Length: 352
Image (cartoon, rainbow, N blue to C red):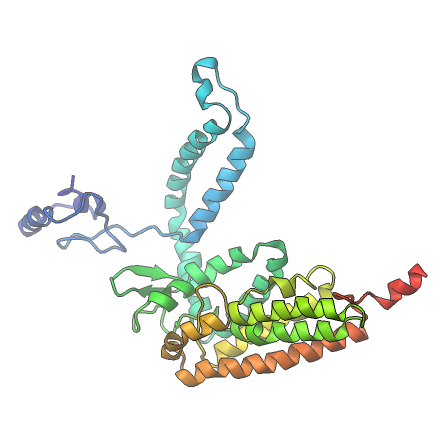
């Protein structure tokens, strides 16, 4: 099987004597789980194209599993098979369903590759369209966050679009993977530089949201200001250092929807500005100060203006701190928007 595996995985056709001799020698060193990768075969035998759905495959399998669980977890089998009833029956059904799903996904992969990898992927990763694409991504991603669905948006640019090669020769995909592991000169398509879909979050999390926190503190009622200040200060520190934004965002995402819409469009603008300036940075956890410092060298390496571009992130953070503070303060007071420690004056009059 080890000797035949390249032939089985490769293109059909008779092998030459040289290829047969090569296989006999190579079979001593090929692990039993050898697989051809990305159409690169062995001994001159072309390999099959690697089918790679990325995270979309995992999402689809998760949806199928959730549906089958809800459908079959109460199934009762005859007494002889009672051990496999109920919850134990679900893995059996899921395994069979995933086999069929794998066959179906293999058949439609050319369509997926054309639409996403060669179509949408090229558009979203080329330098002349990355600005608009990054802005749209930032807007959609933030609008999905209150529903807990923003990770679905992340999956597209982070782990699917764009291609690179790691130092070990592994083919990798997506902004996240290529930023941390991609070698310079291996980024595809032409003009693609990883980081465009992460960089714009740094000015927001390190500057913008702390500015929003200050605005909500200043707009709080005198009696509530001390408690609101403690909440906003801890949230601002968490956002600046670690990129954990929920303490601040969830303070107004549901009770003050207009403020959250302003926030979403400001995130979009930051993504577009950073992409337009050629700044490239990334994060392994979130876009806070810790990740900014840890990835400073890599950011300077990938940014079009080097370390200058990476340092510009700090200036943008200051600018967005002021923008958020001014816009949030004005909107809260002018439109009488209720925020932590501050109730609507109109509602207070009605209750009287």
